[in-house]
Image (tube, rainbow, N blue to C red; front, side, top):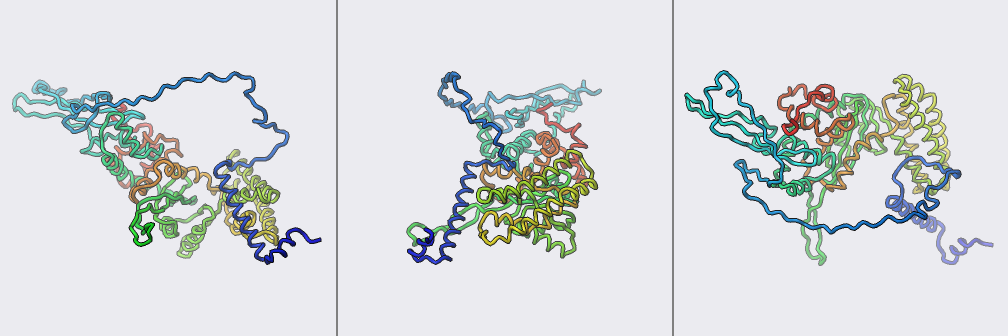
Length: 529
């Protein structure tokens, strides 16, 4: 008796080749649907979960049965209150603020009234100048009150100078500059939202003014971020990745519905950040207008050591090109990316995928033991060669055998996982003989998480210059986080120190060195004194 599928093929006269092609297409479409379902409803964690039938289900039984329901609390409706601007608060400096904005008066000392010639001067008035300062979550107006002096004999009138400001000729105190930058880079608060918060606090400044403040402040910090990148390249081990960010506008032609005319439209360009993680826990975010290899070659020029990356083909091309030019770069691949391919095949080939995941998990347990024992470089290499290398050798032998199965289609998730791992056989074994190289790039992915978090809040960078400046901020603030440094304290100090620090010693202002040299004697804003 013929099978049902054979009968259908004979009755509809569908060639077996076309039937197999349609079945492969359906399988590929089903895989895409499953992937989208997981992105919407599935778990995001990559932790290896082992089913335990003896473990009770946390949600197997209702936990709140028999308990009285909590009483509902009445919520009052929100009443909007509109405050009238007080135009009388426009002072001689042009800074406007309402009566409910807290102020702090700072009396500027007069050396003339404290010296031997104090009797020769008399106070004839008071002069005030204003600066807008910021504390975490609030704003204050710093009023610098200076005595106006008149010399009794000569009649000359003078007053002490106001303390130097980071941005001379502006209302911005250093605390405001640091607060704007931290809110933007660390808490992902776009400047237009900060502007709204400032208006609601009673301070009137234009958005363009805030943009200029941040831009000028980042210009002062750019040499420090460049020093961070230079120090990373002098090390022997680098982890590198790329992540997208829309920045700048490009002109395109959009046809109207009538199809008789076209009109230009402007869309945001797809650009990329290329974060680089150094062996001294420093991260540099460089920006490029494309994902091509040219930017990576420029950034890695002069570097000699080990480059750890994901499976993006550009890295292999860049390494081959630079090695032909005289550099010595060894490529290492990430085991976490390899594992993800097998994890995607769990629903379709559970037995094979589970075996590969279990073997990879053994490698991670070995790395956890090395970290726990705090082994030195030589012992780390010996331990990896003794315990990890046999596992990897057996795993790749199994991968080779699995690739010989004729029933695996090219678009099958298991086929893709086997091919991804097999094509990076040597790169995945590099970490065994390099003690400082990590088994994966998870440390870098945690550091670059600020970019996708920023995309969810400010969506894009309005200009390419803005993207480059955002990279400078992320370079310093993320590196501060890696070294347990308060980025606000760091920026307040460095913005004041950069003008008086020798340019040849700019490396001392990087977060890693700053923590050792200046953290205990950091410069503060007048609002903190």
